[in-house]
Amino acid sequence: MTSIEVAALTKEYGSTRAVDHLTFTVAPGKVTGFLGPNGAGKSTTMRLVLGLDRPTSGTATVGGRTYASLSDPLREVGALLDAQNAHASRTGRNHLRALAVSNGLPVRRVDEVLEESGLASAAGRRIKTYSLGMRQRLGIAAALLGDPPVIMLDEPSNGLDPEGIIWIRELLRRLAREGRTVLVSSHLMNETAAFADHLVVLGRGRLLADTPMREFLDEHSHARVRVRSTEQTRLRQALVEQGYVAEFAEDGKLTVEDAKAEDIGALAAREGVAILELADEQASLEQAYLALTAQDTEFAAAPARP
Amino acid sequence: MTTSAVLRSEWIKIRSVRASWGSLLSVLVATLAITLLAFPLIGQAEADNPEYDALFSAFYAINFAQIAAISFGATAFSSEFAHGALRVSLAAVPRRGLFYAAKTAVIGAAALVLGLITSFATFLVGQLFMGEYAIGLGDEGALSACVGAGIYLALMALFASGLTALLRSGVAVLSLLIPFVLIVGFVIGDMNAGVAEFLPDRAGQVVLHSDYDGSLGPWPGLGVTALWAAAAVGAGWWAVRRRDA
Image (cartoon, rainbow over all chains, first blue to last red; front, side, top):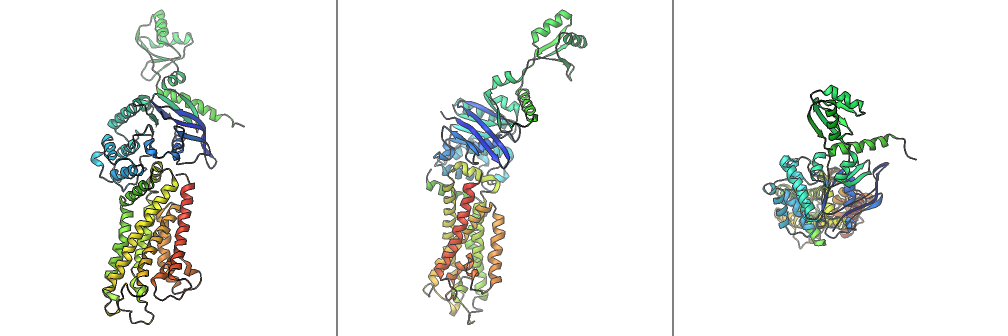
């Protein structure tokens, strides 16, 4: 199976280090979410994998080979970098035809991917008439053209309507089930949580995390309980006396940090406060991600390393 | 990945962008239109002038063809710089040497075919209106002038495409080259001596003259233009190979 291997990858633009000694591997058979704030180096890393930019040092390979050495790269790696990257006066079909022909792909693949991405009826129109969502679909169609074992998509949900977002989610899950290597960057946390099995998180060009989604959530979020009772003020008083941090949320519920529902329930019972609602809060990817990047920001505020 | 696959892909790219395909066709269309307008009206007007060069006059409309050829060379390459299309192209054909050579070859070949058709067409159509002054392909220098004009147009297209690859902008190249071929020729006028003779357009047009008293002959003249085109194509390659896409 084919993986994407990034080893000690560094890219400098002038004095700015966009990618800083990055090492990770994207494994087949799952969807890897590629997260990080704007400017963290996600797109740069993808361009380096595709050989579009030259690394300052380090390597990026696909299945152990550099992208430029692949004989028909579209059969090996399908990539969407930016949906705007297509000459706007071509028709969607001609854009795909030129790509297919260059890699010796049969022209019927063009119609197949147009069909699959829901663009068949717009194939004869010029790309300048496409909406952003349609351009995303065209970019994804181009990525699927060579039926490649490795798929790399930069912000594929950008500009898609709700239907399109469901489509891309199911497509990514299916591609992973088929055993392909799928790397997807996104800034939408809920979206990423819906399709990713594994996460690679960047911050200012460096690797912050490379872990399965479940572990990431466990590691970067802490237990929290939300509780509603008949006597919120008294309950809060009792919680604080026990050493809990309990705050009122906007909806009037109490949020208790680092707590489990069973402990809070028992405490309320001892105090004789009637519980109306009590639940452990599910850690969201967004919270876990923000917790991680907050640490990174603190690190950034520290004095410069020697 | 085969060379022929990449060549076919590049041809599809030229065909499928109206600006590049249109400017390629306009090499022929504009030239024939100018020929059909000018020759019936003023074709014979200067024919009695002792300075008259029947051969060079026959290629009057090539002045316009070269502008179309330059536009074609520039737009055929600049389409890669519009909307970041180059990234998609290089992701499909990551061997930049193959990509650049194939694109250059398709631009050169397309311009050569259209250039040859254009030069023969403008010569033959123009002479239909020359009455007693008409010359034919059998006249001295006529056939080589037709072939030379076609080659000249292809070289100007390559010159423009190489510069476009270097400057990454069709607009920059067009605003550089079109004033250059339109104005510099007039400003320098009939000055045949010196550096001016070695400018790409002046040198390449020696082949259109039946009688030329400069130091360059017709084929060495085209050779000088070819060197200009080769330098531009080489500089473009340096830029495409070296730069991040």
